[in-house]
Image (cartoon, rainbow, N blue to C red; front, side, top):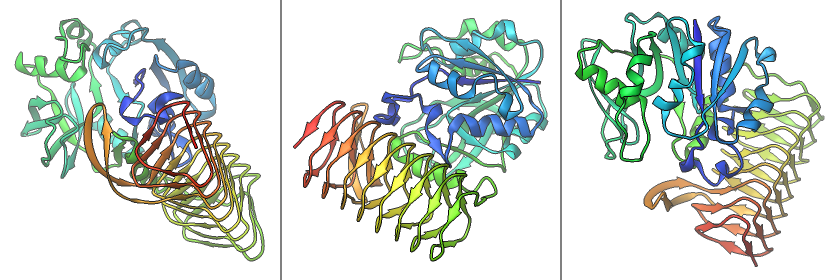
Length: 398
């Protein structure tokens, strides 16, 4: 069986972090989203993968290459215009010769979820999940495991069976894709294809998974996805832990990293390769510090993601925040966490998190970021500045 991974979109609601990478390349558990998908497929013996790429495709292709180091064979198909998931799937028609899986490259799932999708009865299967809140997902109406209706993103709080965006299809799907109606957003979506097939009498079944499945619709959702990802694998200490440093619970320390004396780290925590932490730094649960990052002395990191190559100064407190790649954070920086109103695609949403600082930004010493602050790519924030709200890409705040 082959698998198709849809990885062409940007993930606009995860801006500003997707200004320089697609959502599939955002790290959770110190691995890009799509790497978790590939490893789950490989664990189930699925070796032939077709990845549909578009936005920032070179970054994806350079990272995953031919898939050899993951034990799979990856070929790439380009979606030149981002016209939706049904259009993306139509691009692989000539590559498929039997029943196949379709998965989103920007979701997090484990090998059990993939195994259940493979084994579920029926030719056309939607992997589903039970959730208390489904307003930002497609909601399935199911009768005796058969899908009778799909409501796409009802936009209101409701509990139910949601569509995870993972499917098992037969070859006949390619006859139906050209008949997909265009959505209000000007795209062609697989959910619309499936809704049309259901109305025409096709049997589409739902399987509610007991495995792990998670998504990050908005940028602050990365923190919960990261917490789940840190629990998906065995943690190993391969780096150097100096005398006097304390590691409690599941902690991963990558090769070439050093945890200096006086550090106190409480897992689950993932620290990548070639990192330098401390001395006397504190890293608290559900945090990830990616490869080649540096965390200064007496800094405290709580439930946050520090992306590759970033330097965090001394005496900082970073709570419930995401700091992008190759950033420079000055001494005594403070990212406060709390409730805030954030505007995403012209809609105001209430969220509870700290701050997001996108790639290649520089923040001066003693800067304070209030809850819900969003700093775009390549920004410069001066020392002693208090920042609230959104700062556009390339801005200077003094």
